Length: 261
Image (cartoon, rainbow, N blue to C red):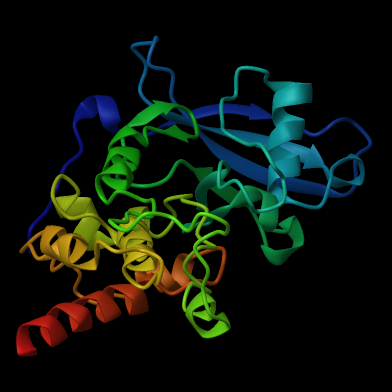
């Protein structure tokens, strides 16, 4: 069996432990990944014991409490607190999710919080999504048309055509699915990954778009699309309950149907 050894500067070390205030009785322990690029130190795991009687119910509330009351240097992304923006994507107890949508009480024991896996880390819980967003831009996520727009109305859809977009437009580009995919881990420089492919399919099935052929041409590539091996981690981890694996399968079906005429 192959064995892999992390470089010495990547090995996690034990960090600081911050005890709960004296007199606290409702205590939960959070272990948080920490890494500062301005320091020569290895990444570490800091432990925080929080008094849950003075903390909100969600994992993001706990992270905010740590930053506001214990260690202001803790770095992470967050914005909407409603599972809409996708900013607070991170790994919680081994599974990618949005910290603002996960209740602390849905976990037992210690809660372990890490940045999204297999991505370069900017600092602490912030993953570098530059390449991910560049891949998203590459699929041209907008309506492309050749015919002129109607002079006195929008480009309209039937109710049936509009329903085809359900479960696709809902994606918030949090990258939870892509960073849970082993195929994306090993081929992310060429494989677009579940999130971007779901978005690509969203434009393929939009009745208002007139560049279906060109979009399929761009995806007909051994790596961009066909590195998907239907592992299904993407569908399992999506915090919005979407099914990127199905969108990828439907895209492959469109390519087959085109070849068959």
